[in-house]
Image 1 (cartoon, rainbow, N blue to C red):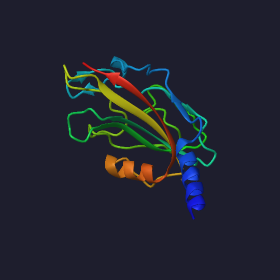
Image 2: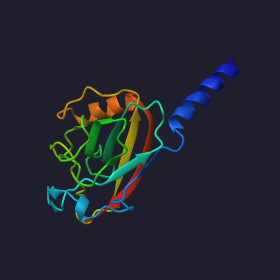
Image 3: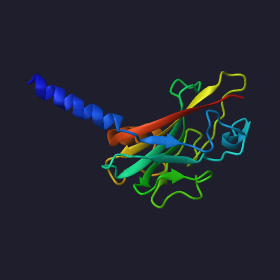
Image 4: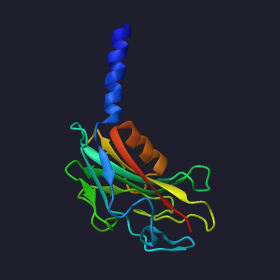
Length: 176
């Protein structure tokens, strides 16, 4: 019985680690810039979604999702800047400025915490410590999630996490 439990734990841990699944960005080198700063809500950036690339997803992957989340936002629950689901399994990147313009066919952008669909850039309060922006790509076990653009972020997050085989993340910082 103990041996069986160890085998199950080992297999489960292997699925979560997912080998070399990696996320990179030519736009995000540890810091966001005015290019990724929100335009509105007291900020005057360009609000351009960052370039993202991923590789070595698990072979069981059937689609991808991408999120950008600020756990340091002074809301008590963080701030969702971008949630994208139903990215086709053959996609390995999103180009700079893709949000709302050049998304892969079938991809669905969810309403962000600013109340608009698509990417909403960084806009931490002036003088606050640098905020962390956690960028994550998820390898999912389903070809699509039945989510619409007006789905709220907690429901989208629940569905993404329920179907995640593996994920790769990076953190960038920004302060004003």
